[in-house]
Length: 473
Image (cartoon, rainbow, N blue to C red):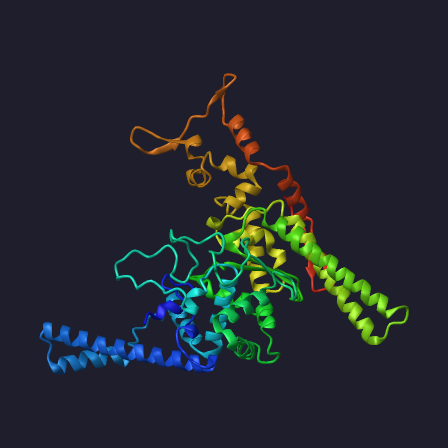
């Protein structure tokens, strides 16, 4: 059994651990998975012992020396040489995290996260139903596959743009889902449809059990997906202090509403479709609901009615704030995953109020982008070409990053890279005409206007108060 076949971030991933074993419940499956891990550990220990026997025999090591070596390696005794203890590396932390995930809540979260991946078209549900068999495990020295066996791919081995004929789960080709009960793109309903396909007539029992495990108080998977899943997802997609979540939750501070984007289907105009097709209709729908509440309450609302009206007013205000922010950012957002996820999302930092640590990190990266610390990024060139392009004259690495190396640099007779001599125009040598042309080709009036609006936009402070961020271009 390939243990890595249950880890969604592994090149060997097929499907979650709880779907690789049998059992009448998630708890029973978790016990079976733990037993299979114990059996694998025992087998590895036996193999290691056999290897040790062969090595000791080849080197002619006596039984007494073997005992000394074995006991020394296994004692774990530390020698105090007066030096500072070394910090545990990131790999050790990840091993500990993997071990902590091998319990019922961790395995259940892994299952639901996989179902979300199926719901956006990332993973192939047919591996879990048996309709498709995973490929055989590669040899140790075979090249790693482009996509893991668990991903939904075509005959070319690459991710598909749409569901193949007869595929049992419908998913949005633009990678957009919403946390909005009753909406055709509702995330929770999409995840539930995956459970229905995988567990069939027992899907309701598995769904309720998963809800009770992940949300012990309310037994509601919508609550976990709304308030806890993004944090779980970030942790699973972080390594060596590099954070690269591929599912992005844009929402309101209360957590009552959010839009989910799948990174690998995001395009530069995605926020426009989110704004016009999802968020604005949602605002209108909730405004209609507020009007109905006020009409039903009349001139003398009861205490309960006043409470409902105030809650609805606060929710509508949150949605309007979110709508305003999406409208501000949409014209200037040009995501490029080669920049890294955090830089891609930095301009959207206000849209992560439900997860403060992530919002803070995105805001910090945004401030550094503004300051010019990441001028190698595509985002920086898109937003500030008048600042970035001139730097390429003196910084070859920037010129390479932005495809301008041949414009400003050349190899001399010794094959060393040197600056090109500036061209002559009207009898004068200088780069300014070239720079002006390159900047104009890359500049956008709408981006400039949107940047100005973004720097002067208010920042939500809680659900009701707002304050201005400030800033400059």
